[in-house]
Image (cartoon, rainbow, N blue to C red; front, side, top):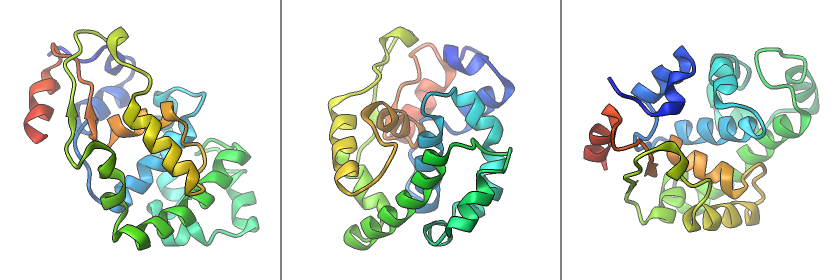
Length: 189
């Protein structure tokens, strides 16, 4: 089976590519999970984050946004000693800040799903790239998302992170046309 080039680098990457990447997500808990994981990825490889994903789930109470939003300084200090996650103080603090902003956004829009999907008019963007170099690092949609998230006090939500987030949660499908997942994900849109 032919896959996107990046999916061939590790078993975890292959599994993620084959089972999750680009599938539209509408569950707020999963949307929160990917928001935290994408922020953690900043300046790191996605394979690093995938390899620590189970560690993140355990460390961050399975991404229970209510619990993460109430983490104390003591809890944050404990997380910074946990080798199962990326022990970056700014990123760990951002997870707590983002949980608080996530809850406010849920209150305003009824769900985070209602808020985040508006950036693509509630319909996934299906791209038809022939190869990886064609895939952009950001788009006007990710620019708008980033700007609005920052306005709402979210951290680690630059336009490149937002575009990776959009790919992860299926707001955009960037499976190359030769990839076996391209047609499968296109049908889900």
